[in-house]
Image (tube, rainbow, N blue to C red; front, side):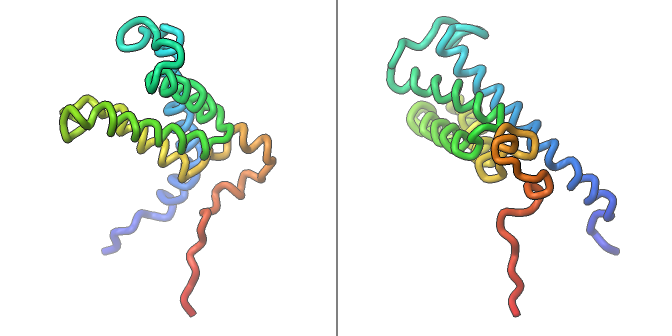
Length: 157
């Protein structure tokens, strides 16, 4: 008895992959940009429940700026890989400098959002923007080119 999925299941999964990747990128970018807007402009509940982060304050204001600009770039799919890598790094920094000192695990130290954003942006940096992105409009790559893996396996002969 074979444990592999039927061919039509694989084809369906392959067909929706670009749409799911694009939706994932958009949602993660939007949520991240909202965090930045809240901290910089006091909207959506503001920074830490109200107010804004003081202009130029390290690291809060700079983190909020990365959240707003990086999140917006990822949302649009413009400079996606670089923006996502910067966002991922900023969340790793936030986790290890703000949360880690309170407890070992994210569940104990309140660092779950930082960890989730860090890994989500790392995945986006590795996978790219998907077919529906500003990057695609600027480079005019054919849609089929994005579905191919970046590294093709070589056969040992």
